Length: 261
Image (tube, rainbow, N blue to C red):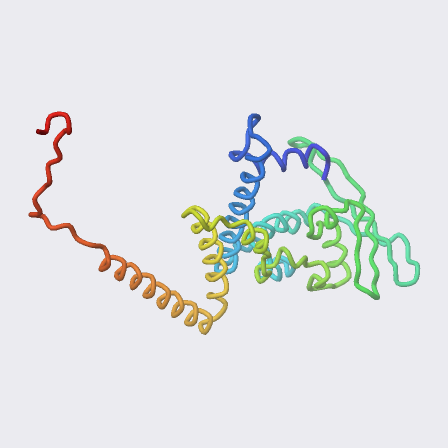
């Protein structure tokens, strides 16, 4: 990622939370809020990915394989590489040293409408370890394989993407780390805003664990019902302890000391 890209990424992260007049002390609290909001949004996206299937656009085995594994967001990006495999019209072996085979993949790249050029990409393929590397470095930068490596895999009859090229972070079954220690240690238990943030974070985790299986769901639902029942009981007890002021109680009139005799 370039310096400009990092700067834009940071600006997007803090957009709506800090501004040019934000003090250092305010920045720390705003950063915590931004971080919690970010993780809550990501948790909702992950939940959606786990419980809905993306649309498969081709008959490519790689696309079908990762449609069942990747989150929706990363799958859409990977889908572009699958669709663009058709532009890689030639895969040629140019060198072989032991188990390391070097390929040149020719890709027709569109520059402007009705105008294109041929770009050559070198791909190294280890036939023993089933390891692959493309000069475009897409996997190193983005975490998913490029159209050139997919073309070489296809050329060699590899029907499934090896597991070492499926980054755990992009899987729908990945257990996201919520930075729970950071959030919990910074909770303000003296006001309702702190209570809300902590309970919301815990609730999202409960939901994610509760939909793993029917047994998980049953346990989570039962605990929620029990907790709600206890909270309502506390509310009822507090209501009973609150003294009622009789409606017909006479009001005591206090006279001004200066005017009283």
